[in-house]
Length: 228
Ligand code: BJW
Ligand code: ZN
Image (cartoon, rainbow, N blue to C red; front, top):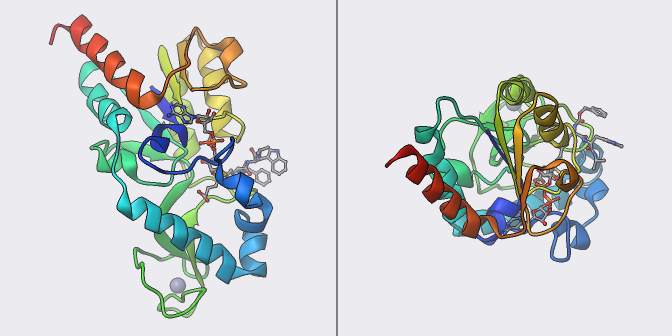
């Protein structure tokens, strides 16, 4: 099982949230990543998401995403869970994944719950055909995760014997609880992060290396062990 966070996309050029170059150093989360912020100032929230969509539209998956996309072929059962909203795992070929925090390129109507993928808007907030306000289909602080998503992630975790945590600070719940659940069921925990995190002390292996560098090497080793 592989669980990823913003760090796996940083080598593609997606800014992470925390840390020296993190988005939260320039913007206050409570002003942008809550429903209250959207109610208070939908234009600012939308501008921030449009700015990040522009970045995401220009970039490509990196060697880390591509290596993870090849992994299912080498395991009896494999689950990919991501906190990322950037769609890069899917672009790299991981079509079966659990997106815990939604998808930044999808819009959702707060009235009828309908979705679309429009990118150009005549006004902010943009409106749905039903007249309701559209919002980015991501999970803000204090909101529930998409129906069934965490349950699926937790179920896979309780059944796994190898758990990779890649490029996440491990601060945001409930995603942060997954490696601890894996530990409880006796799985071997591998952490890949250029820094130490809350998880490091319980990990069986910690690679202080960029994910785009180490994941191809890990995939190579898996292939070697599997004999192809
Ligand atoms: C590399 C690398 C390289 C760099 N290679 N590594 C107190 C008050 C209010 C709420 C709470 C509270 N206490 C707990 C909560 C709950 C809250 C929470 O956890 N808050 C904590 C911050 C304290 N959680 C929630 O609210 C969640 N919902 C929930 O719990 O519902 C139940 C509930 C309902 C009502 C009330 C209370 C509970 C929802 C969480 C939603 C998170 N949303 C965001 C924004 C998504 C939309 C958007 O993109 O704008 O999701 S926040 C942001 O953080 C984003 C990320 O997915 C998430 C995690 O970040 P991640 O991926 O770990 O990134 P970073 O930047 O933190 O770390 C990157 C790491 O990579 C670093 O460690 C680097 O070292 C490393 N790295 N380059 C390897 N190349
Ligand atoms: Zn609608």
